[in-house]
Length: 242
Image (cartoon, rainbow, N blue to C red; front, side):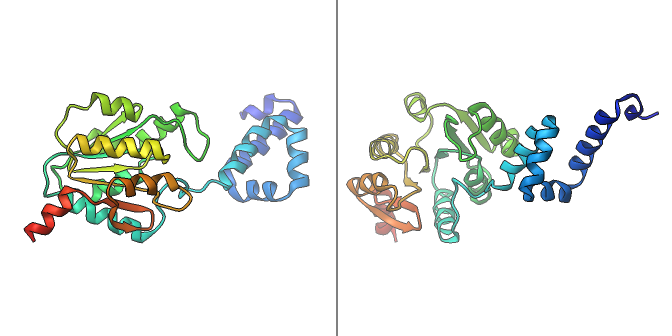
């Protein structure tokens, strides 16, 4: 016997409506598109309000927010990762977000090259709590972390900088705080720790602090979209070797 047989008719109808909404995507879309009907449904059946509200938010969610969008940027990053494959030391990414760039780096790096990605999960474009943000990112990167290819560190980048005692990185990719002061400090740390390739994201007009810090540090030897690679001793020695 069905549970609905034990329920008052109004509750049974409500349960049936919820069940149909959960099963039928088109029904949910019709409700969301029809504002008067949406208002009526949520007014008469308040237990549906949270369900519809969450689905409404999901409709406007963009998976590309906060990450690199352009092939030209990814192509340059791929080149930098491939260059780092012949160099000793790990790849360090500052600013994990949801792990999209981390996954790309893992695809391009040599099998023995370890990736360390650092984020304090204080910001994301979907307004998730830090705990939710961290949990989601760990799910996305679960295979890479479980197989030892990626080490996911949940900590403030400045704390990580102070505590890092590992080998000089082959590549440091900076994509966290885009202010002038933070970018300058990040570049200085990468230089002091002996990073061979120093690069990052958001070399754009709307992030003037990044451009200023990069130019003061010697300028970008490579630049594509928002991705930049700092002109440093590594590129000079590479040119001499060539």
